[in-house]
Amino acid sequence: MDWHKILFNLYFTGVSLAGLVILAFAFQNLNPDNIYVYLFWIAVFVIAEMKTVPFDVKGGQVSVGFAINLAMLMIYGTSSSIVITSVGSALADIIGRRGWQKMVFNTAQYSISLFAAGMVYEKLSPTDQHILAVNQYIVPFIFTTLTFVIFNITLVAIIVSLSLKIALIDIIKMDLGMNVLFLTSLAPLSLLMVILYINEPWSIILILPPLALSHNSFKNYLKLRQQTRTTIELLADVVDRRDPYTASHSFRVAKYAEQIARQMGLPYEQIENVIMAGRVHDLGKIGVSDDILLKPAPLTDIEYKQMKNHPKIGYNILSSLEMYENLLSFVLYHHERMDGCGYPHGLNANSIPLGARILAVADSFDAMTSDRPYRKAMSEEKAFLELKKNSGTQFDPKVVDAFIEVWEREKAVRERYQ
Ligand SMILES: [Fe+2]
Image 1: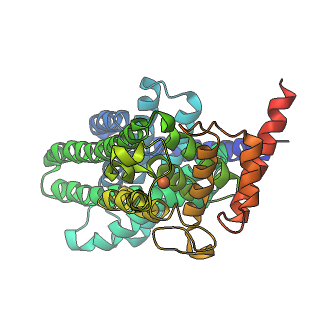
Image 2: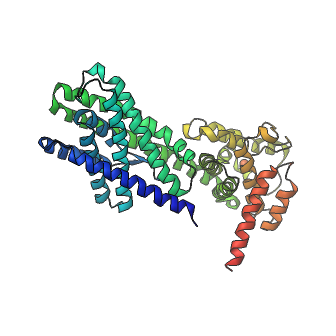
């Protein structure tokens, strides 16, 4: 029995029903005089939702629609905000052919989040009117925004966690930084919309250019991050290809490191860091000359000393890029040994970061199972025996055991289908 699937269905049905009931009530409370206002903001919201900005591989995305929801809530009331947002979101999902499940869930989660935010706003606002003097709505605005963000992030994170089978806390941790960055930069625009409306209702549309600008800035920021990562990984591949014997080495190391990290049950973020580090762990070889890197014979002491600089060079290159911050130590220490005889710092045992201990095993396994100019590739069986033999002295026994478990499981699967 697949508990994830059962829980997913229960959660999806529960949220959808609750959201649709709230939406039905919201429709009944609409002010018919405002129909054109609603239609205008629904159109704006559809455009915003059509242009969501993806920020990770597992489907996390943000949209400037957030600024519109909250402004609508404070200007026209909870029900109007729920209808504008839900209808706008549903239309965007239909036009974007994102599937009925996504459309229903998005509509429902927006309705619930705005309903909760609306309750907070109505509790904190000192009068029955939705428009207050500027200095009176700062505190209600902050708490209303926080309520919306907490409900929105949690409702979405739970469904992502159930569908991808990733721990909820990992999903929240992974998305939180990006969401907080985006939402805190948008929240002031929301407040600005309310201030504009108080002075002159029609002037509210002046907010559209800054909203579009905010969307573009964020999109470009994420694009730049992605392009930087791609460039660095391409550079690492070029370094691998300098030596025909190590082509795709980093790619395979990242794959083995990922399998080990998953087997060890590491949190999602750590697994991602290990993969990223695997892809670039030998980038520092860019600073090692061809004479040394491609030498088809054992290195002299001086040459070996130069070769041993590569983790430090890689560390120095990557340290200027914020996205590698959490995995710099994996790159720097991927040649350290459990007995303290590794390099560059001679760290031992648990003082070596776990990510670096994983890379050491993945790196050595790939080196042993690949051809070299002076020797043929070792068989996988023999390479695992070598890892086992050096377990505790060179390698972390827990890491080696995890890798052996992965290998044995895969071997059993291969044999079953042969
Ligand atoms: Fe290396």
